[in-house]
Image (tube, rainbow, N blue to C red; front, side):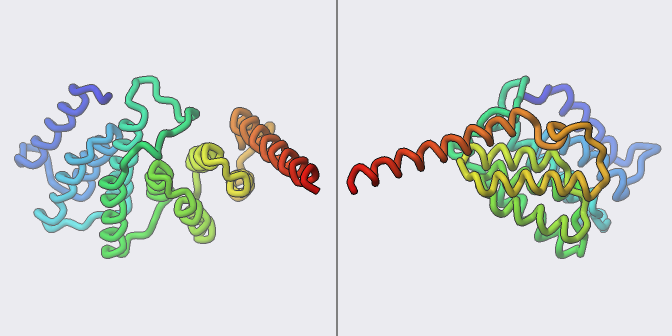
Length: 232
Protein backbone atom coordinates (compact mmCIF):
# COMPACT_ATOMS: atom_id res chain seq x y z
CA UNK A 1 0.00 0.00 0.00
CA UNK A 2 1.12 3.58 -0.63
CA UNK A 3 2.18 5.38 2.55
CA UNK A 4 -0.41 8.05 3.38
CA UNK A 5 2.29 10.57 4.29
CA UNK A 6 3.73 10.28 0.77
CA UNK A 7 0.36 11.17 -0.77
CA UNK A 8 -0.08 13.90 1.83
CA UNK A 9 3.16 15.54 0.78
CA UNK A 10 2.11 15.46 -2.86
CA UNK A 11 -1.27 16.94 -1.94
CA UNK A 12 0.49 19.74 -0.08
CA UNK A 13 2.65 20.49 -3.10
CA UNK A 14 -0.49 20.54 -5.27
CA UNK A 15 -2.27 23.05 -3.03
CA UNK A 16 0.83 25.23 -2.76
CA UNK A 17 0.88 25.36 -6.56
CA UNK A 18 -2.80 26.08 -7.18
CA UNK A 19 -3.04 28.67 -4.39
CA UNK A 20 -0.48 30.85 -6.19
CA UNK A 21 1.90 30.68 -3.24
CA UNK A 22 4.70 33.20 -3.53
CA UNK A 23 7.55 31.81 -5.58
CA UNK A 24 5.37 29.35 -7.50
CA UNK A 25 4.17 29.53 -11.07
CA UNK A 26 1.68 27.24 -12.77
CA UNK A 27 3.28 25.96 -15.97
CA UNK A 28 3.25 22.75 -17.94
CA UNK A 29 6.45 21.74 -16.16
CA UNK A 30 5.13 22.47 -12.66
CA UNK A 31 1.93 20.53 -13.30
CA UNK A 32 4.00 17.66 -14.69
CA UNK A 33 6.03 17.60 -11.47
CA UNK A 34 2.86 16.95 -9.47
CA UNK A 35 1.68 14.40 -12.05
CA UNK A 36 5.02 12.59 -11.84
CA UNK A 37 4.62 12.19 -8.10
CA UNK A 38 1.02 10.94 -8.33
CA UNK A 39 2.05 8.67 -11.19
CA UNK A 40 4.78 7.06 -9.11
CA UNK A 41 2.45 6.18 -6.23
CA UNK A 42 -0.49 5.30 -8.49
CA UNK A 43 -2.95 7.85 -7.13
CA UNK A 44 -5.23 7.79 -10.14
CA UNK A 45 -8.00 10.20 -9.13
CA UNK A 46 -5.55 12.86 -7.97
CA UNK A 47 -3.50 12.49 -11.14
CA UNK A 48 -6.49 13.17 -13.37
CA UNK A 49 -7.70 16.01 -11.15
CA UNK A 50 -4.25 17.55 -11.54
CA UNK A 51 -4.44 17.07 -15.30
CA UNK A 52 -7.60 19.25 -15.33
CA UNK A 53 -5.35 22.21 -14.48
CA UNK A 54 -4.16 22.28 -18.09
CA UNK A 55 -7.61 23.24 -19.33
CA UNK A 56 -8.29 25.55 -16.38
CA UNK A 57 -5.06 27.49 -16.93
CA UNK A 58 -5.06 27.34 -20.73
CA UNK A 59 -1.86 25.31 -20.83
CA UNK A 60 -0.87 22.58 -23.28
CA UNK A 61 0.15 19.12 -22.03
CA UNK A 62 3.21 17.41 -23.49
CA UNK A 63 4.53 13.86 -23.89
CA UNK A 64 5.63 13.71 -20.25
CA UNK A 65 2.12 14.63 -19.13
CA UNK A 66 0.58 11.60 -20.78
CA UNK A 67 3.39 9.29 -19.69
CA UNK A 68 2.73 10.27 -16.07
CA UNK A 69 -1.02 9.70 -16.46
CA UNK A 70 -0.39 6.24 -17.94
CA UNK A 71 2.10 5.55 -15.15
CA UNK A 72 -0.58 6.43 -12.59
CA UNK A 73 -2.97 3.95 -14.20
CA UNK A 74 -0.35 1.19 -14.48
CA UNK A 75 0.82 1.69 -10.89
CA UNK A 76 -2.75 1.72 -9.59
CA UNK A 77 -3.35 -1.59 -11.37
CA UNK A 78 -0.12 -3.08 -9.99
CA UNK A 79 -1.01 -1.96 -6.46
CA UNK A 80 -4.36 -3.73 -6.83
CA UNK A 81 -2.94 -6.96 -8.26
CA UNK A 82 0.03 -7.04 -5.88
CA UNK A 83 -1.35 -5.50 -2.67
CA UNK A 84 1.57 -6.57 -0.45
CA UNK A 85 4.66 -4.47 0.13
CA UNK A 86 6.85 -7.17 -1.37
CA UNK A 87 5.32 -7.15 -4.83
CA UNK A 88 6.78 -9.70 -7.19
CA UNK A 89 5.91 -9.70 -10.87
CA UNK A 90 7.51 -13.12 -11.25
CA UNK A 91 4.34 -14.49 -9.66
CA UNK A 92 1.36 -15.53 -11.74
CA UNK A 93 -0.81 -12.47 -12.26
CA UNK A 94 -4.39 -13.30 -11.45
CA UNK A 95 -5.69 -11.05 -14.19
CA UNK A 96 -8.61 -13.35 -14.96
CA UNK A 97 -9.98 -12.53 -11.50
CA UNK A 98 -9.23 -8.83 -11.85
CA UNK A 99 -11.69 -6.37 -13.37
CA UNK A 100 -9.52 -3.78 -15.09
CA UNK A 101 -12.36 -2.18 -17.02
CA UNK A 102 -12.22 1.27 -15.40
CA UNK A 103 -8.44 1.60 -15.63
CA UNK A 104 -8.36 0.32 -19.19
CA UNK A 105 -11.04 2.82 -20.21
CA UNK A 106 -8.98 5.59 -18.57
CA UNK A 107 -5.93 4.46 -20.54
CA UNK A 108 -7.79 4.48 -23.85
CA UNK A 109 -9.22 7.92 -23.06
CA UNK A 110 -5.72 9.17 -22.23
CA UNK A 111 -4.40 7.93 -25.57
CA UNK A 112 -7.35 9.54 -27.35
CA UNK A 113 -6.58 12.92 -25.76
CA UNK A 114 -2.90 12.42 -26.50
CA UNK A 115 -3.76 11.91 -30.17
CA UNK A 116 -6.00 15.01 -30.15
CA UNK A 117 -2.99 17.05 -29.05
CA UNK A 118 -0.87 15.28 -31.70
CA UNK A 119 1.57 14.14 -29.04
CA UNK A 120 3.70 11.19 -30.11
CA UNK A 121 4.45 8.14 -28.01
CA UNK A 122 7.71 7.97 -26.08
CA UNK A 123 9.57 5.05 -24.58
CA UNK A 124 7.86 5.71 -21.24
CA UNK A 125 4.32 6.00 -22.61
CA UNK A 126 4.81 2.75 -24.56
CA UNK A 127 6.16 1.10 -21.42
CA UNK A 128 3.22 2.07 -19.22
CA UNK A 129 0.54 1.46 -21.84
CA UNK A 130 1.97 -2.01 -22.55
CA UNK A 131 1.86 -2.75 -18.82
CA UNK A 132 -1.77 -1.62 -18.63
CA UNK A 133 -2.70 -3.84 -21.57
CA UNK A 134 -0.79 -6.77 -20.08
CA UNK A 135 -2.41 -6.36 -16.67
CA UNK A 136 -5.75 -6.30 -18.53
CA UNK A 137 -4.94 -9.59 -20.34
CA UNK A 138 -4.82 -7.70 -23.65
CA UNK A 139 -1.62 -9.53 -24.51
CA UNK A 140 -1.87 -9.48 -28.30
CA UNK A 141 -2.70 -5.78 -28.20
CA UNK A 142 0.36 -5.15 -26.04
CA UNK A 143 2.51 -7.19 -28.41
CA UNK A 144 1.22 -5.23 -31.42
CA UNK A 145 1.89 -1.94 -29.59
CA UNK A 146 5.48 -2.98 -28.93
CA UNK A 147 5.96 -4.14 -32.52
CA UNK A 148 4.64 -0.80 -33.82
CA UNK A 149 6.92 1.10 -31.44
CA UNK A 150 9.97 -0.78 -32.72
CA UNK A 151 8.91 -0.05 -36.30
CA UNK A 152 8.84 3.65 -35.38
CA UNK A 153 12.28 3.39 -33.75
CA UNK A 154 10.90 4.07 -30.26
CA UNK A 155 12.97 2.52 -27.50
CA UNK A 156 11.24 -0.49 -25.96
CA UNK A 157 12.27 -1.48 -22.45
CA UNK A 158 13.21 -5.09 -21.70
CA UNK A 159 11.25 -4.80 -18.45
CA UNK A 160 8.08 -4.31 -20.48
CA UNK A 161 8.74 -7.40 -22.56
CA UNK A 162 9.55 -9.49 -19.49
CA UNK A 163 6.14 -8.79 -18.00
CA UNK A 164 4.46 -9.62 -21.31
CA UNK A 165 6.45 -12.85 -21.58
CA UNK A 166 5.41 -13.81 -18.04
CA UNK A 167 1.76 -13.45 -18.94
CA UNK A 168 2.08 -15.38 -22.19
CA UNK A 169 3.74 -18.18 -20.25
CA UNK A 170 0.89 -18.07 -17.72
CA UNK A 171 -1.59 -18.46 -20.57
CA UNK A 172 0.33 -21.39 -22.05
CA UNK A 173 0.85 -19.64 -25.40
CA UNK A 174 4.17 -21.12 -26.51
CA UNK A 175 4.20 -19.44 -29.92
CA UNK A 176 3.71 -15.92 -28.58
CA UNK A 177 6.16 -16.61 -25.74
CA UNK A 178 8.87 -17.44 -28.25
CA UNK A 179 7.97 -14.35 -30.31
CA UNK A 180 8.44 -12.15 -27.24
CA UNK A 181 11.78 -13.83 -26.50
CA UNK A 182 12.86 -13.03 -30.06
CA UNK A 183 11.68 -9.43 -29.58
CA UNK A 184 13.74 -9.15 -26.38
CA UNK A 185 16.87 -10.27 -28.22
CA UNK A 186 16.09 -7.88 -31.08
CA UNK A 187 15.57 -4.96 -28.68
CA UNK A 188 18.91 -5.67 -27.05
CA UNK A 189 20.57 -5.70 -30.46
CA UNK A 190 18.71 -2.60 -31.70
CA UNK A 191 20.07 -0.47 -28.90
CA UNK A 192 23.54 -1.94 -28.72
CA UNK A 193 23.12 -3.34 -25.22
CA UNK A 194 26.10 -5.33 -24.05
CA UNK A 195 25.23 -8.56 -22.23
CA UNK A 196 27.62 -11.11 -20.87
CA UNK A 197 25.15 -13.93 -21.38
CA UNK A 198 21.66 -14.71 -22.62
CA UNK A 199 20.21 -14.62 -19.09
CA UNK A 200 20.73 -10.85 -19.01
CA UNK A 201 18.23 -10.57 -21.85
CA UNK A 202 15.75 -13.35 -21.11
CA UNK A 203 16.01 -14.08 -17.37
CA UNK A 204 16.78 -17.66 -16.39
CA UNK A 205 13.54 -18.12 -14.45
CA UNK A 206 11.55 -17.26 -17.59
CA UNK A 207 13.67 -19.47 -19.82
CA UNK A 208 13.14 -22.36 -17.41
CA UNK A 209 9.38 -21.81 -17.49
CA UNK A 210 9.48 -21.70 -21.28
CA UNK A 211 11.44 -24.97 -21.37
CA UNK A 212 8.92 -26.62 -19.02
CA UNK A 213 6.03 -25.42 -21.15
CA UNK A 214 7.63 -26.79 -24.31
CA UNK A 215 8.30 -30.16 -22.63
CA UNK A 216 4.72 -30.30 -21.36
CA UNK A 217 3.36 -29.66 -24.85
CA UNK A 218 5.59 -32.40 -26.30
CA UNK A 219 4.47 -34.82 -23.57
CA UNK A 220 0.80 -34.07 -24.18
CA UNK A 221 1.24 -34.56 -27.93
CA UNK A 222 2.95 -37.87 -27.28
CA UNK A 223 0.07 -39.06 -25.09
CA UNK A 224 -2.44 -38.07 -27.78
CA UNK A 225 -0.42 -39.91 -30.43
CA UNK A 226 -0.31 -43.01 -28.23
CA UNK A 227 -4.11 -42.94 -27.82
CA UNK A 228 -4.60 -42.57 -31.57
CA UNK A 229 -2.28 -45.51 -32.14
CA UNK A 230 -4.23 -47.61 -29.62
CA UNK A 231 -7.45 -47.01 -31.55
CA UNK A 232 -5.81 -47.89 -34.86
